[in-house]
Length: 71
Figure 1: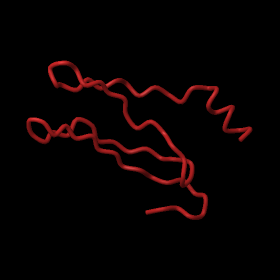
Figure 2 (figure 1 turned 135 degrees about the vertical axis):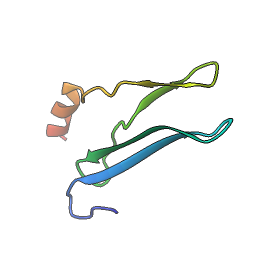
Figure 3 (figure 1 turned 120 degrees about the vertical axis):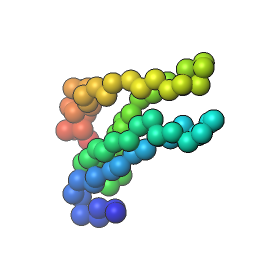
Figure 4 (figure 1 turned 90 degrees about the vertical axis):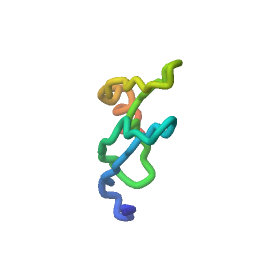
């Protein structure tokens, strides 16, 4: 559901590995400040053997918060 009033938007993200069979490797939710914002939901690497290695979610870098204040 799109927020047209500038309010936060709840987002659900799924990452599904499809080969050799469908497997959910990540399912999570995050809240974006408003419609049109972007954020990192997950970081991952596909390894040479085809498996998926999830990276930890780090907090937002301090400089991104400062940049947003002056945008």
